[in-house]
Image (cartoon, rainbow, N blue to C red; front, side, top):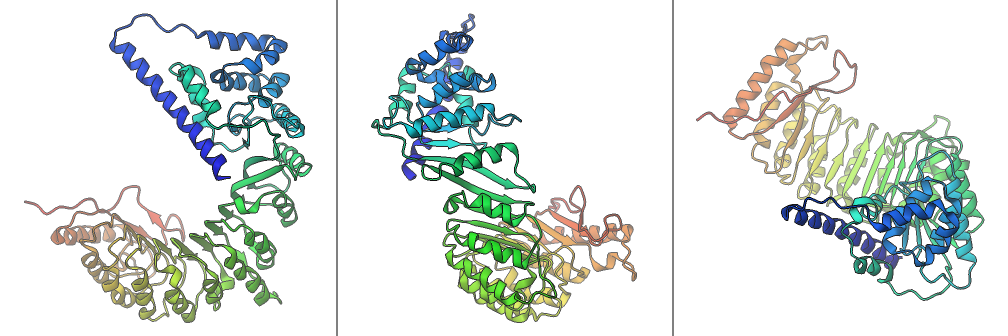
Length: 510
């Protein structure tokens, strides 16, 4: 697998070098004040002429110059020259055929022609002389390849350079025993579209010789039965990112969990709200089924969980199953217990966190010591801290300010949605002054900006803003801060940001 990837990357680098060579050639001509424009290349004219006579095009494929393959293939694909497409696929002189940028069309005719040509290759005992194809890439990743090998970008490519792409990797004329097919999977409808339906049916009939690979899996809306059917045809250990962007019941997530456990190379996992029914008799069993799968995720680095209410009181079950240090952890909009925070601060795999998001986790009744200890564990590495709408009080924030000031790598900090006084805001500014990397600060409008009934007074807010500017000026450290009102009179309970920061870069006057 790694050898194939290396060859693909090498082909892309050659294409980039070819493009740069073309730029240098054009610049040299301009410096030489050449007045004659480049006429169309003979190869371009020959390619256009070939497609007018499909029989001639097919017979010429074996002797076609390598640099003419990509532009001629694009013309044949979009012009639906089916037989020419089949012949070119069977003689494709590159390891990868990136089709993703070409198949954004309602019909599957050209794709069907490519797959039929691959069937011929897979059935042959001896590989055609020129064919180097090992990877069919149906993702939108081929822009560099097609742009550098087509049109003007190829004008500066020498024959010797293009031959190297085709011949760099010595290939024996062995049969094509297997083919890797890369796709992007976004399951967002109850039924599959025509393209995916046709592709999956083709793969299912050739499971032995086709390895269907997907690096990013996104689930928006699809019945679990259909999800399981699709994933049964995918090499699950190829998946590196999983996004579940729909609301599932806990039992549904438990059904999906064994599939997740087979995705051993997942690095990034995002789970949207998980509903727990009041009548969920097997809730604890489902939690075990889900959390135990983390034991098999040996490469997980980023974990985002929105409203994971099922973790309340049992967060330690998941934390014990983490196998690698996390870079980013997000647990939002749910209730946690004291013991959950204690176990979180004691977890060895959070001590290298770069991002921590606990927004929407109510901390009002928690001892500030718990948050202190947690921040101490991540102070050396933390770059982003989000504590929005946590119900943090003045007393709690003041208690954690000393350890917060030791988060020397912190770049982004948000406290929006917490009701904080002007007094504690001033102390916050003092403790965060001079933090070398802190550049994005998002704070709530001071408590004094609101009436006893919760209405925001814009005039009072403007006055307090000016006072904060003066405080920053006296501290002598230039910075930009955003203030938000929450709830906002216009947007209800949503946190509201001004289009421009309330506080601009502030410097001491000379």
